[in-house]
Image (cartoon, rainbow, N blue to C red):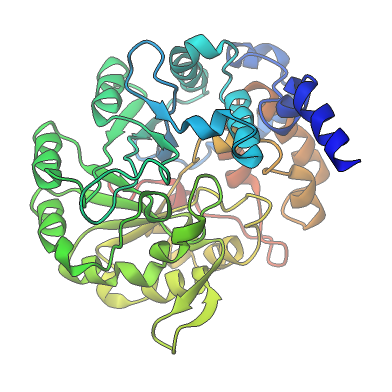
Length: 402
């Protein structure tokens, strides 16, 4: 029976299902002024109150594609083969839907066109840091294609930012194990790039590896900030390497003086507590331990992407709201295109848990249907602590680097 259901699933049209999970949009971004109710418009206006528009940036945004149009982008072929890995195949199609891609032969172009449109039709435009994404490398400097899920060339990111300087800031991804990594860092530093992206669970680097001292000192010498995923990773391949994103592994570069943004505040999963006999604790607790250490006040930062995902909602957001004294070291992040996957952002859950009123939930659903990027920002500005009813301060949305 299960085999029959699986075949029915595979060989029937799944586009409706993928659309419902991600990309279930009702209108185009440029229709925002015509279709939103007064309540939704009011909520948007309130979300920009007391915000210094010169200081807000999206510190966490992904660009993706299939290499169409000679872009150099790459996706692991197994993600497009249901018989190889059904879970990855489904995830790939949900991402396509969330990104607004309709013609797979024009996927790279449509992704960027959609992203520009989302920015162009924000009520107040702010820039987004768009990420390059390196392959998974082995310690010997060779690419591990099996564990690489996608690849976004740095030159592509830099070029997109040059073409759209009002919307994008380039963030390159340089794996420390690859040959020529130092020279690559210096090349982009000379171009003015000031941020470098890692995702250890997916890319395979160990941040505590002391052989990376020269790499870290190159970051420092060029005033480059490392933005690195911390905590469990579920969006891309990473199961075999989850421990590499343990926040405590970043003590070594922090002690050297590297400026680091710990993405997502380590808000998901369990990590080994190296300070207490490797017992498993919430990764967030380890992040918070480091974040509260006085010696890291000048070089340890974070951003809020992912805090409202249904599997992450709770203590990390509550703790952040409870501690406004650290908001100047936090910045806004969307983690687009994940914000366009309505399956993982559940306003009904936020309402039931007391983070939103019913009216706010309905208004946010309207905004999602037009512009998921705006939806995420407004949602973070709107949620309140279920007990104290306090909200995140406007300072938490200002970039620590502006």
